[in-house]
Image (cartoon, rainbow, N blue to C red):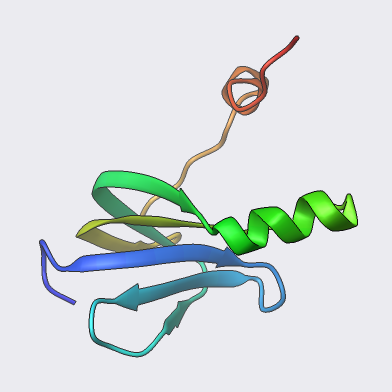
Length: 93
């Protein structure tokens, strides 16, 4: 992959890795890797969303689309989320 290439990716829960699909190429699996995406958009599959509603169970049906910027292994870059970081993902009603 080159900087600026269009990609889509998602966390592969079955294999415990990140699945990255460069435009026009086959899926690449990355373990213990950080991928930085510019202009990221989260896109949810309408059919996947419909399945979740019908079955009343949760599943991952979204991909992140954007332009590839950096690929780094966890051995060279580390990130330790705090409780505050993790709580930002959840909204209260």
